[in-house]
Length: 265
Image (tube, rainbow, N blue to C red; front, side):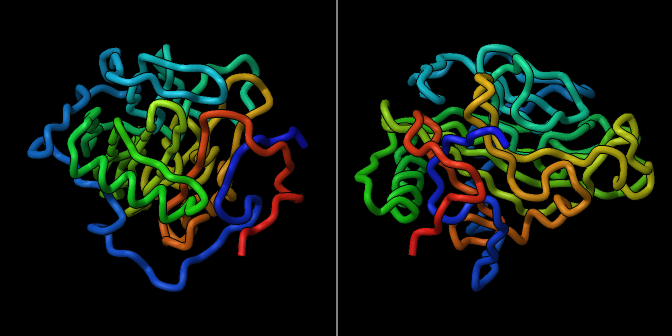
């Protein structure tokens, strides 16, 4: 197994369930046009325009000043990603990206892909509080955030009303960077071009969740990625908050494999 260099609050390599389910309202950061979000065009395998970040985002030793919010469940650095069938991490010469739920989204059949970069005090206060809760050994104060939300999005070739709602929040204090992945409602795993069934949205090559630095060394696959069980990602967590996964991603802080990583008591 490849070495994974990632700081996780709780055990990697095992799926944890929190004691109590969180409501979607408390799980998801506020989103929508009323919050100032931009909507991606209705386009299969589409993407946002190039987003020049107000603050560089450090991702495994490199600082990025531009990113894309891609319709197929990916936030990518430097270049957009139109690929709809997910490959397992690490990617061979892949572009660095965060994949809250990499699958064949088709927002022409339903749903919206929204995003905003923000330095709004309310959002930054929430990022600060969340990170300090999950990483109490740090003193973190957010100065920038990106909130990207896939709201009730359909899958390619859908012949059903099944949709997914999930979110990625990227935040930094200019030096340390985190990603927060929120899963509110997951009803499908696969589009028909990836082998899925048009009426169920299941089968074939299911969605991938996690992130990849593009260096073949630093990556993370959320358990059950590219398996049918990724449908249940709303019931998993690594921070004792059902439906939420949080990672520090700015630099190598631990060199370990999933089997050897330890849970903090």
